[in-house]
Image 1 (cartoon, rainbow, N blue to C red):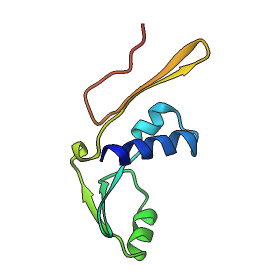
Image 2 (cartoon, rainbow, N blue to C red):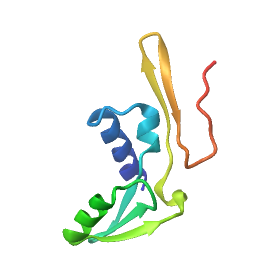
Image 3 (cartoon, helix red, strand yellow):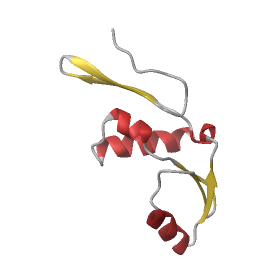
Image 4 (cartoon, helix red, strand yellow):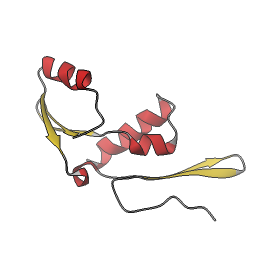
Length: 96
């Protein structure tokens, strides 16, 4: 899951211009094998999941967020930092 999670967060940052916190918060999915895709049990629009099924994917909804990794981000800005902590784990974004 690690490279899949990294890719999903980076796509959210680069392509969708989300903040680090929004990129961490977004729903995650995992390609399992073949056409099997695991998704978190909330966050994905029903239309997205329906379209994946229409294209032949078997969607497995999982309510165990440990299956989808987590992220802690530090984004260096001019004169400061933007930090984010994934809600899937205990953690806190703190600066001092």
